[in-house]
Length: 470
Image 1 (cartoon, rainbow, N blue to C red):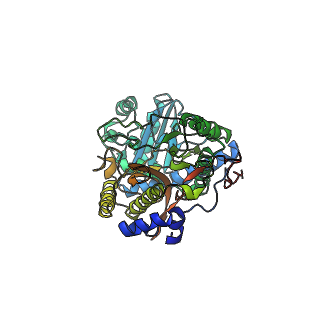
Image 2: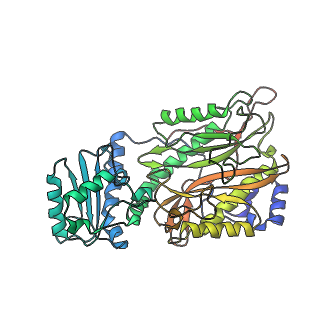
Image 3: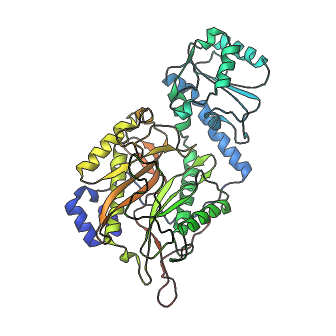
C-alpha cells in the first residue's frame, strides 16, 4: 500500500504525528492487496453433494503428496491406527467428506518409495486379528527401514496414536517391524499444514463471508447504543452463521475495549478481559474475535469498530484511535516481513519484537497456522503469555504452501481518552511464493467498522451499503 491510502485512515493531525514520531509507521505495506477488493458480501456454499466432491478432490491431491513428505523427512513409511471415536488427529485430514468417524479398526499405511507396480497408500477397516496378517504381508513386500508413528509428547497433530492402539501394534506385529517405529513429527505437521492450490478460491469466500458478518454485526442493524449488549451481538453472529449454513469453531467474542488488556498480565490465567459494562454506548471502541467453518476450512479474524454519536460521521473518530489501528497495521507488516520459509517461529517472533522495539512501540505477537483446524499444524509465532519464545511448537520451521493467522495487539496512548489502550488485529494470509511471500486472503482492516446511529431528525446517517448475497 502507498501512503495516500494510509491518509484515509488517519486525520491529517494524526498522520503528522506518526511520520514525525514514528516515521516507519507511514511506510507502505510489506505485502500486496492489503485493502479488500470490494465491500464484503455473503458467499453461498455449494450443495452438500458438491461440497463433498470438492473436499475429496482436495484430499486426494494432498494424499498424493505424502510420499514426498516422507522422503523429505527421511522416513520410509507412516502408520496410523484408530478405532471408532478414538481417531488419530491426522485422521480428520485424511478421511473422505462422507466419513464421520473411523470404522471398526481403521489402519492407514503410506510408503515413501513403493516397490514397482505397488501402491503407496493402504487402508484396512477390520476388527479381527486378520488385519495384522495383512499388514505384515505389505510390510514384508515394501520392507520400510523406518516407520513413523504419531506418538510425539508435545505436538498435538503428531501425537494422535492412542495408547491402546499402540499396545495392539506391539502385540500383533513382529519385533522386526516395531523396532523400526520412529517419531517424525513434521510428517503429520506438514501433511495437515500444506494447502493445495484449489482450496484458496473457497477459503477466500469463507474469509469474505466472515468480514460481511462482522460488518453487519458492527452496524446500526444490530447495535442500538444504550440497549444492545456485547452478548447480544455474539448470539446474533451465531444465528447469522447458522442462517448462512456455515458453522464455527469457537463462540464469537465481542468486547468493549477499555484501558486494560483483554488477556491480563502474563502470569494470569488467560481469560478474556470483559469491560465491567457490557451495554454498548456511544463512543465505545468494540472488538470481536470471530471465525467461520465450512468445507473443512476455518477462518480467524479480529476487528475493531467505533460507535458514532448522533450526527457524527467517519471524520468524528478520535485521531488517537485511528493512530492505534495504524500502529497495529505496522506490526502486521513487521511480522510478515520476517516470515521466511524454514525460519522457526521463535526466530520470527524475536526478530519482529526487536524491530517493533527499535521503532519505539509496544505490542504482543501470537500468530498461528490455520486451515484444517482453527489453530492448525505448524510453527507458532508467540503466544499471549510466551513472548520470549514457545517451547517445541515455536522451534518448528515455517512451512510454505500454508495459511496463517497474523494475530497481534499493540499499545497506543489515546489523548482523547487520556489512557493507553490496546488495539487487537487478526487476519489470515496465504503463501504466494517467491519474493511476494504472503498475501492477505481477503484484505486487512485499515478503517474502523462504524455503528452509525440516528441523527437528531430520527434518520440513520447514510454511508452503510447493503450486504448482497452472491
